[in-house]
Length: 68
Image (cartoon, rainbow, N blue to C red):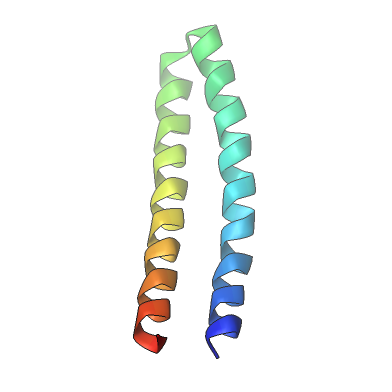
């Protein structure tokens, strides 16, 4: 049971890490171009994706602790 829950969470995390990597690339490009508006947009996207990653890690840790 633990393994399947952990696996499910890992499957949710994988695309989020890929999205964060792509966002990071776009964020760097916007910073290099000094495009303030685009920087703000990518920064919000970065924070949203990061918050979701953290929430899933917290969920995984909570479930792991409960079943320990």
